[in-house]
Image (cartoon, rainbow over all chains, first blue to last red; front, top):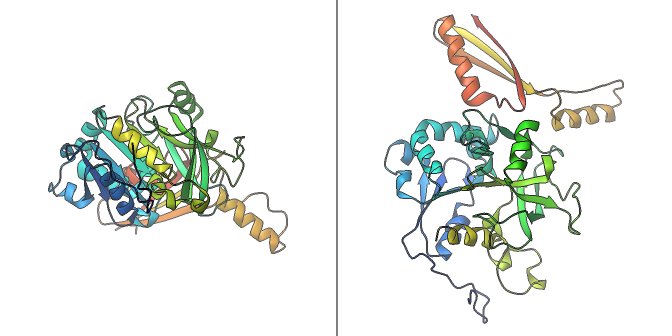
Length: 274
Length: 81
């Protein structure tokens, strides 16, 4: 399939689903990269909309109308209390029943990037080793470096899921977060491993066990992304929407024209709904 | 009027990078003999309701927003002022 034109290197859009599939990009004060995410979905011809949390609260938008829910990164509510916790608490207050219905429908997909991953953890949707948990089963705590870590990292694609089936074995993606250190209890960790929920792990450029800075936060088992036990919810710290086009990559001038590695996350997700 | 004071800190065994960074900074300032520094968040919430109701309300706040039980311990005190 031709996905970029030879002349200018511009990617041509791929209309896989026409306007039949609807995706919602959630917004509230402090979310970011909504536009990059919007363009990524648009690239595949998806009918994508920004949905502010207040519209859900007022009943002007309903999650029932969408097949994909994208929770973007950012610093929602200023990252006060804990990153993502206020966003999660407000989502619970605004649309808890419809959210639960949405995530329990295995034909629907939820993806939370960075702050969105923190929201999914706080909501109890991830790790979700036995379905939705009423209290968080994990945390994304302050990075071990005690700093905001912003750089390109390598992550290993651990297994084929709805979100990674078309992705290469190793992806180069950017991270930008202060709170990304995945922590859980030994019991939940055992369940995560048994359910094969780990999807992305940080690795060194040579493929070996990463140390800082290749593991930017000190996560347990170098976790960068996990799915729930049903496999329809993905949370990840790296930003696939910031690595969608080949020219997003810092090595763009040395690479062949093609696509950024984040492209494969979106493509896998959309293809998985076939 | 009630004043609820809540201290939220990392559980024993969970690394506290901010505490470590502060310990290091204090050592750079030639302070000696520091074994450990823990950093906690301190919340003061003022409520206009009876004590019993206030305690229940703050417990809900802790559960819904202020504490992640995987990594946090907390101390709560509610008093009439």
